Length: 221
Image (cartoon, rainbow, N blue to C red):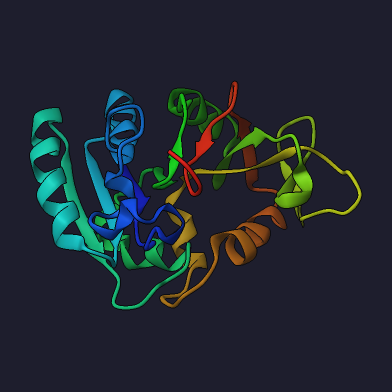
């Protein structure tokens, strides 16, 4: 099994910590943020992690080559010549990821008790094309809210609702089936605004709720 971690951002909101290192290498609980993710992925059988990078790739590669060897996981990079948003990097990394099996995609700044095993089981049992990890927030008006039915099938997304319609949001962790490659063009494109709505329209987009809460480390560590 494989996984893609989106590490292309410049981490401007974590400066000055990111002036000398990429955001995923900033420590969270005494460990580089990205290592929390890689260790959890390895625990559920991921054998190759692909990093979508465009900022300080050499720093990332040097650090993770050693750490990957310790964990017994292959770590490769997929380099963006220009920012590709959140879906473009998936298409760019297709040659690394597409082995006919589902694969994980993670934003690099999400730390949580990742329920990867549960996501795998739910994804398979539902015949999903994509499964999104969702989490509860206190103020959904600041986010895009995920609306879904009793079977966890996603109906639609409501961006920064002014009237309460739900309190679950996209947590930035996905499990995708290889069919998704056919939906994404090789250009800067958003998985949230373009790819997921198209999958939802075909009743193939599901969600899995994060037990407890995760941390999106855009703002603080």
